[in-house]
Length: 273
Ligand SMILES: Nc1ncnc2c1ncn2[C@@H]1O[C@H](COP(=O)(O)OP(=O)(O)O)[C@@H](O)[C@H]1O
Ligand SMILES: [Mg+2]
Image (tube, rainbow, N blue to C red; front, top):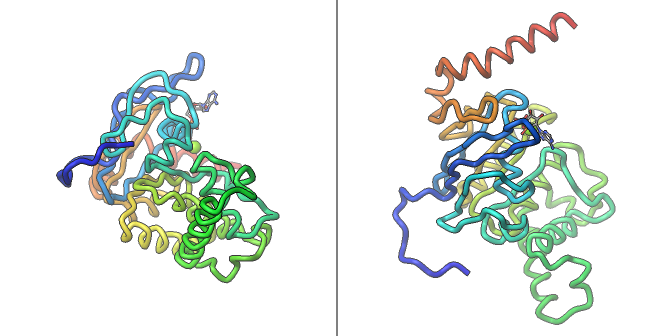
């Protein structure tokens, strides 16, 4: 339980990461990384392949143990906490590889997500008390609202198996919202998705953000990030090499050398394939 505090000044960061470090054997995948996400902001996290983006978000969401550093959400320290406790504290995430229970309906998928974040387990709650059933009814109502927001309400009772890849990404975004988080971390929300769906996902993200949730978005699609984010953090080899508004990031020489240089090299490789 966090103590109730007087209204905090708006300059106080929502997420504050300080000195985050993660090693895999001899490799330092994330190296003393520090950054902030302000309340209600959309922040992008970009960098070449292997620069530590996924590892860093796995760490702050509790899915990887860390070797150093600390991070707080609205002042509450989160280091060492399990993912469902971090979710309850207000930080949830999606995964690059979309996860859904194919045989369950979209509504059921969202209710399972709510229970997972709750730490109580969906199956364990079956047949339990009236209070549990009330909680499930509230979750179902929230789920319907979120399916409306992401444009999947028409499939609420259909099995997730019928969804396209892009629709699965939308379902995952809706699932991440079930716990009423303050901050959602999206891992590659538009990777492998067609351009029409990319625009739809962008609209959904803006809508959720306008309702008050802050977002930290890891993406390979640099244009998507530059359009959507107020601030962009750039990683290279586990270290932060730039942090600022898109206009400055686009022209930052270190970013051009590290990120766009490698992209150009990759394009060159493709041409020679
Ligand atoms: N489970 C793991 N075991 C060992 N090395 C890993 C593991 N996960 C990632 N790495 C390494 O850590 C570095 C950062 O990887 P990752 O965080 O996946 O980068 P990104 O998401 O930016 O592509 C890479 O060199 C990668 O090979
Ligand atoms: Mg990654």
